[in-house]
Length: 197
Image (cartoon, rainbow, N blue to C red; front, side):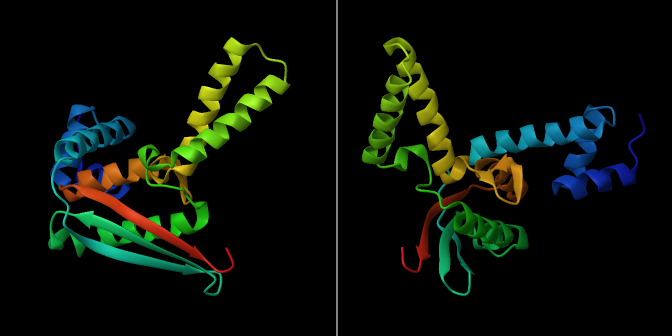
């Protein structure tokens, strides 16, 4: 199939990937736009995995203020070089994460950072709910494991569905940014302030 410059441009507009990467993705997938997008996403995952161990000592602190100054968020987004930290894509991602934290109110960045007492409290609630519904003990444990897993995915920032595009998680967006930037990027920390809470 003949890959036209318009096809390459359309794919680039959809993914933000480089021109040569878009052309290669279209060539390897016989011009199929959806398969080319999947190809680029997989490549982004591979790039992200390769870069995961690199130090991220540059970056930005982005803020988001909402509700007439009654709600505010600060996010630290790190990368390897100040060149990437100054790009529009990097800063836009930092703003999006700050806005997402304001809207979704995550408890922690990842599962490993969720305080054990919060998980245990939820586990006790789920066990009691299952027992009260008359479920046998072997079923109760499976139900509780599933509910805890779902609960953690709802309170951990990296696993939450992005408020502006629920088809992607914050981790998916971060992985795409790593692939696009060509270097390791990490959300280091965030804090959410709300008046009266």
